[in-house]
Image (cartoon, rainbow, N blue to C red; front, top):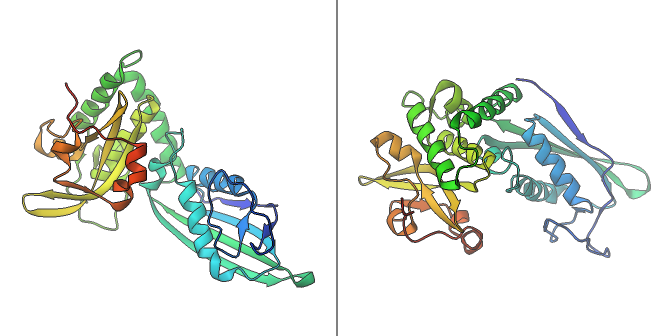
Length: 296
């Protein structure tokens, strides 16, 4: 794997909240901590760019006149969450979030002059693909979009073409399905080049292709209930004509049907129970679900 380091240097002054005016953020970073970045937008974008490039080390340096050590993990958690939020870029948002395994955090403090401290924060992400694999994915996605022949077609036709391609070309990875240490099965790379994947790999490939084609799509995680048993699962929601529809390509590949294609909440929610973040009012307001199935 290519190893690169990224230094976030010369950050705007980091100020203790006490006695300081609160800056205006595009992102609402927590203000109940002893420290925040006056240029939070820039820091978040730098972290996001590093994730997209699969950088393996992200270093943030700053100075402060207060003791921030206890609050650094919470601050970094907020910054990373914002860095992984949705953007207009198909290679960001859910595409990164569901193909990485979190991060390790290292941080230290040393005293400098005038009662101030110098801080070094190092974020060490775990990715399921490396930069070269992602370049291969991008090349293949670009070729595949041309092969699908959907230029000028409706969004519904684009969704159908992507769905049919994945169903016809990617099989379920039963060999590695239970191997918790083999993460490649959850990636678009495995789906495209090994032609096998598990639910997460199907979902991120569908997300990437549809977003490249201008169709809104999200990856949803939660519990799937089938034949009296349940397991952790991933599927998609797709935006069409102002509403969103559920799509579980994994189940349809396993059953050889299209029973889970563009389904409304009335026919889908009983056996697909979303994680809390995706069932929250704020999420549902942003992504209003259709009650009824898409009329195909």
